Length: 331
Image (cartoon, rainbow, N blue to C red; front, top):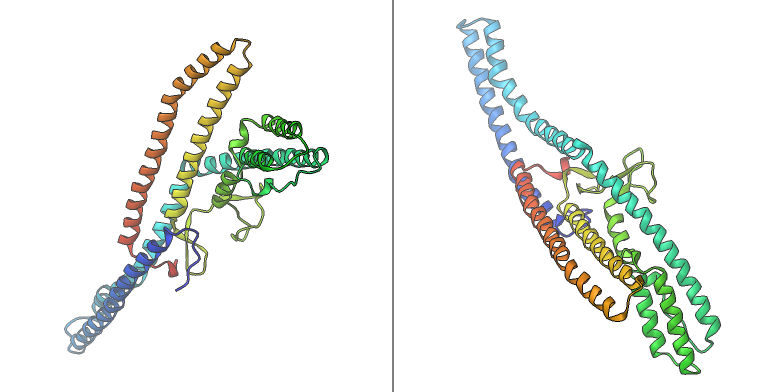
């Protein structure tokens, strides 16, 4: 069977669900056959007693209803009822306390901020390209901002390209490097967030149209988290996607770590701007670095604990799904 899934973790989960679903389906099939056979025998026996006037027609009706019809009815509606309860429980659990909406709002705000930063960085990259090409005729510009993970990596690649290129003189090469460093200073701090973080957010946030299908462009109309396991036809099921939940936790760790690095870079920049001598600046930077180590260690521990807790929770969640043994194809 072909499935539309977004992560490799989901594939073995779906395969396990299908395997145990087959066992459950076989159980229901034979259970229904036995219920029908035993119920038919009971009906015949009740009819035989009715013919021999052993009990009234009213007693015959209630005896048949309770012993046969209700049993078959319960066997038939049990999967639907339990799946419905599971679906309601999942949806209520996701929406309770507006935690999901808080995540959506935060990621939407961060996505818009990153897109604005990238737009500014791209503008600076275009300006830098024009200046390099106009001021240094022998320089062949090959580095592309669009292929770079962030602005820093773009500048680093461009610096390496200038270092390997041939100029008319050493002074020209020095001026080119100074120009590149000037543009590096323009976006010194927030360039840590770039295309990779933006793509991670887009992998989680999706636009939902009124009919429930995914849109092509994220707008403020209706944005949802793509965190559900997919059915065989690619639509959302009643179960959370382990891959998507793990992606959310990893993205959270990435954001915490990069925010921590930005705070460290800001501290060092403040020291650079202080009107003190070189020796004192060096001492203050060393002190700031040592003071930053506990925060860095704590951030790293938080990231490790977050991912570990997410993995253990997902193991428990997947085991719960397998215990319920319901096929995704009927979701």
